[in-house]
Image 1 (cartoon, rainbow, N blue to C red):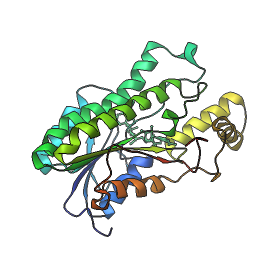
Image 2 (image 1 turned 45 degrees about the vertical axis):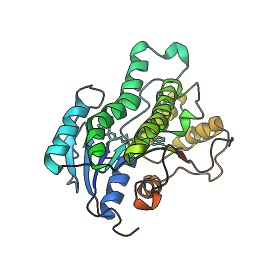
Image 3 (image 1 turned 180 degrees about the vertical axis):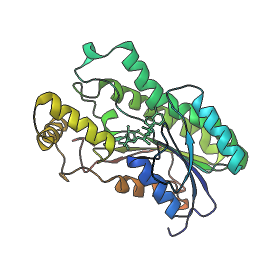
Length: 257
Ligand SMILES: NC(=O)c1ccc[n+]([C@@H]2O[C@H](COP(=O)([O-])OP(=O)(O)OC[C@H]3O[C@@H](n4cnc5c(N)ncnc54)[C@H](OP(=O)(O)O)[C@@H]3O)[C@@H](O)[C@H]2O)c1
């Protein structure tokens, strides 16, 4: 796959940290010109073109799309990675309408709007690849921890499948990638929060999450770079027959087929 993305223009939302940063760096190493977005520009120097914007705001996707197309003239790869579990745990009674709405805006509508802004350019060139970063929690919702987050990402999965069906005839592939537990700032903050609330250590809190999931055969969290490897394959020409699929990368978690 050396330099197999030469000449490609790739957008990675949430590309400043964690999984998004690893994907941006990997696509760039394969020759793509990478544009990243986030709410905050990192202090350290970044190797990619940066566009600021909060994707909870309904207008942000259009602004990002317009700046990207004006500056680079086309887009070949879109990775909708920005997302998070922003709601409190504790089940249905802990979740307000605002919590539900925030999850849906960030985890579903951000991707819907970014894609809507950029798909016409892909249709015009009869080519493109979209990856929506979902989560294993959409397939295995944990009521104590992820109810609204899981529901919003399950909606993302259904949207991914429908979009793949619509866009296949236009030469555009659309897939979801569903990581399990990945060692990122988001996941570390999530575990630290559980540890603090339960008055246990970080490792004990991680153990309690593993126990909730039921099993984690590989026994550890993924590195963000491991998720980036899968994404880089799916966006490459080598994956040209793959669309409408949802790839789990979770160390064997989720005890069902
Ligand atoms: N970590 C895991 O274990 C795991 C597992 C399954 C799925 N995922 C999914 O993988 C994706 C990335 O997660 P991560 O763990 O890498 O997260 P992370 O370390 O918190 O990084 C998130 C990235 O998204 C940006 N972002 C967050 N909220 C945003 C908003 N409202 N508007 C625009 N950008 C925003 C962040 O930058 P700013 O904060 O500056 O905006 C950052 O660049 C998410 O969709 C998450 O649901 C993660």
